[in-house]
Image (cartoon, rainbow, N blue to C red; front, side):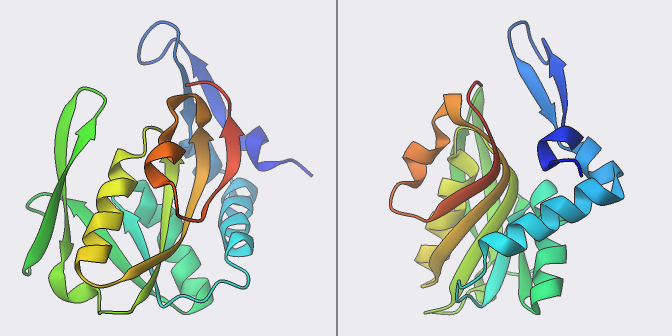
Length: 174
């Protein structure tokens, strides 16, 4: 049986020289790869008490929704600015080359609600750091953060100190 890492395609020198791009879409394209990823995240959550799953668009949706469904939890989408129709709470965060804004429906998180965040990749950690701030501003508690892949060389975990963070695959580089 193949390991999850075997389903990731590594593309050298993309998007620029010296970078190895880790393509998660090849996990999604293969039924066994997708099952390994979703089942791997579900295993990370064994014994964790939580109420809902949050995932940022778009790949956080792809991996978060099947986990929420299988575990009979709700799914809360985090979207780019201007995409959610009801009253939102917004958070700006740093990207490698600029800033971006994410939003969450204000009524999606209730005080005391226990939240799991699921995304495909942790790089610099900026997106997840912003999501944590949104959850906590609304009175929720982040109890676990799960990733399919981690680029350890970008030190994203540093921004998430104090939180339970786990990745299915860890790449040492950037």
